[in-house]
Image 1 (cartoon, rainbow, N blue to C red):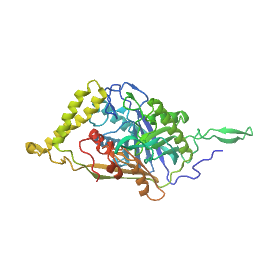
Image 2: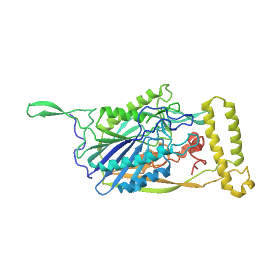
Image 3: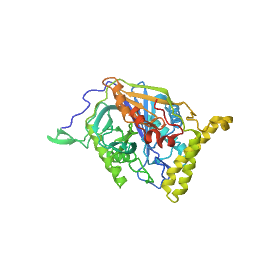
Image 4: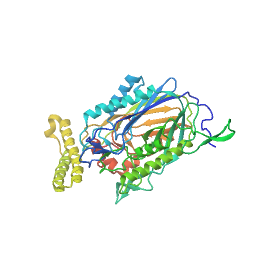
Length: 473
């Protein structure tokens, strides 16, 4: 027999509301996530959504919005939070704008070599995200909350050591977080095992026989996993949520009345398994189904989310930058790239990859000249380092829902940050790190990652996002 997993009332009288808005763009928009795409979106594999959930403890409200996008610029995310605050009264520090980091979504942030943004779509998108929160808040109702975990072996560390260098591949000994974590949202003062896992039985008093009782399903859930949604690859021109979309679809079939809000944990150095399979769509389906099964297990293992109320905080930090190469080196690189583009001929993908480097080199040279001003002619072209900027400001944010803390980073964060966060929270509390939250400034490696180098540290990645790399400091 199934038994309720909330035998006692939660200490806090929670309310929650949720809503999902379709944000699928029109065909033809440039897609984001791979620099080798040479045309706009040609179709839709599965719709994209902005999914919002608002929590209320009777005194304080907080909102989490998950958008099926690669990322948003921090300035755009800040404006969205201000608009939400104006329409709902929820302060910006109590709002997380998270992007799932799907590499098959539209271009909605500033990159080198990813095509051009669609201003009309961007404008509508931001209003849709605001609307999702407004509508979720209008639907607040009494709920109970649970927290559960299950094994989800869907990721592999991608920073492979090969020939003395770190390349994007597979490191079977590298760090991953192999969990699916689920926050279940249930009818007030009750929560039960998922209908996919167990069926309750009761005695029919009139007939004197045992009859099946409808299994209790959650009203909504937040699903968290720390794996890059990148399985569909750069040759895909169909808009998609990637494997999280297949997971959500499977959960919808099993629990038709349950809304799923998906969040990506710190996955900067973790790719999905089966990246080498030729049929990427089937690989995404396989991984999504595996994640959905783990989510259902996590639901059945859920225990009451304890703790009192909602707390929120944010802190602005200065993130130090490393130097640009000398101007002479930038010019030399640009000239070499131009020669390689000519040599590439009709090899479109090679030309596109080279164009990313060329765009960066051109912008870097222009920025150095602007920085030097009237003294540009006096620049020592062989100067070993040029610091256009010493650092920039980034926001770190935490929202506690009872004893569960969501920690939001505006970076593609390495998975080790989840372990570190778990070690730092007080005993009895839980923490989930969210990457690509309230913007995205690029990869945030850990100390070991900086020491090893590679794509995410000093390779192409920072040239996609900006001009200067992060400093190990």
